Amino acid sequence: MTSLQGTSSESVGKPPPTVLVVVDEVLVRMAVSEYLRECGYNVVETGDAHEAIEVMTSDVAVDVVFSDIAMPGSLDGFGLAQWIRRERPDIKVVLSSGVARSAKAAGELCEHGPMLAKPYRHADLERRIRALLASAPKGD
Image (cartoon, rainbow, N blue to C red; front, side):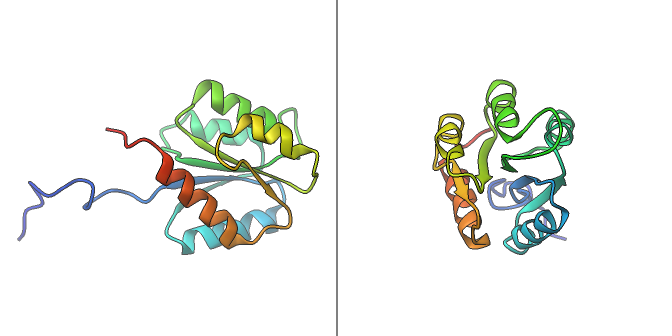
């Protein structure tokens, strides 16, 4: 039996990045989530911002949140991004909207190419997530 001691933790046993997909439309959420899983990401799905906050305050390690801006409930994608910036600034955020005027506000909440306009291609979303993860400081 081979021992893994002395092996770099960067190459062995490092879990894939986790993407939290926050989309209220079930079919859209399922399609995006399945695509990201096929790309090798660990994906957690929620239907609204409050569920997303529950996930981020649990023991689930989230690297990137992909959220629609328009969602039902008292907290939309902007409110979720503001909560993340305040409470979990280590988590990267990608917001999506079909409303063009949302782009400026999204740009103020997410530093790196924040807004993904609908309709978007899944490959464009994956490239955005990969770029955000590459720009993240390497933690402990």
